[in-house]
Length: 496
Image 1 (tube, helix red, strand yellow):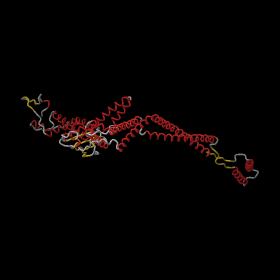
Image 2 (cartoon, helix red, strand yellow):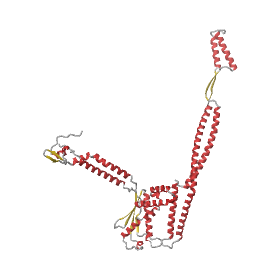
Image 3 (cartoon, helix red, strand yellow):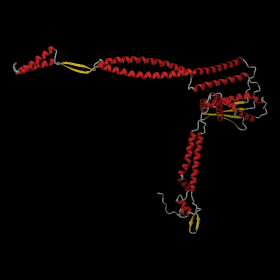
């Protein structure tokens, strides 16, 4: 059996007659054995790639995609604009360019608050607005408006297949309902923009003024929303009314608690005075034993007379005891009574009442302190509302004036003012073949990325395993040695 140390510099075996090239003849099973022995190398290469890929995949945000489709024909509105020589394909490309313009994106975003569409951008804008003076806030709003337009254009997809007059539209967003509303708004703005571009009739001044007033109304609403967000208020009027009602409730409760605290203090003082003048113990039972002792002595004298004479010392001693006991009973002197003492119930009742009143007094003191703290907090909140009331009233007054002005435009439309101008051109060459659909599935590339990560990890592991297998020295099995040397293998020693 040839040892690896006997190999020459170029993979040959040293023999007596010179160098004889020796190449291991490996079968598929030998290759698989070597591949199995390289499993830890394969795992070391594949596991980090797989872990990193899975981490990135599950960090991907959820995205819902709402889809719609437009059908383009060579309508009269396009021919009237002097482009009647264009074919349908050229017109489709033109419509796609109109859909992708930043003006369409800007008008679409103007219909929604930024905090709903892009909350991260809205939060960043508010942070920067609080850190800069008011003179620079307009520049920050412009910067973040452009960022929101870029984000919308990245989520807004417009595709047109070659030799087809169908335009596929889609909008992706983390919320399915918002995606549908965004796509509908984008199509409405696009149709309005087409009417402006391809109309050869004058635009009514009242419509232009209405758009300006509507934009002013949106700005007024944004100002009110920014004011509420800056001061952490959800509804100015309702929160102020709630604070006023709380102030009345807490004030009444505090007055009741103070009155009860005074009453409890007076009652506790009176109870303690009564307690100091009441004995803790008193006589529970009084027993008169003189009559019993007198009868016992008389009985004992009768028994003694049966044995002794009246002049005997024993009988005379008993007579003296009887005479002394009768004299004491007649005079009311001597230890003739037995008294048993115990706790006084009146004292105990007064003590329990005093303890209860003392506990109630402590509770009322703590309650009074808490009510005072709450009342002070409500008063601070009311003072804050009073400080902000002038600014809030100005914002609400401006919004109400703009709404009133917008209502006058509606009244002018109903009365026929401005009817001398023709209505805007129709969009007869554009048909909505599929309305915006409500997505029900997550369209993010999470699982596709997971599958790609698994594939790359397995492929890299196999490559590392193959390289490790081909770089191994020696013979993996006895069969490989036998095929290579052409000699039978008589014995095989396994690893210890």
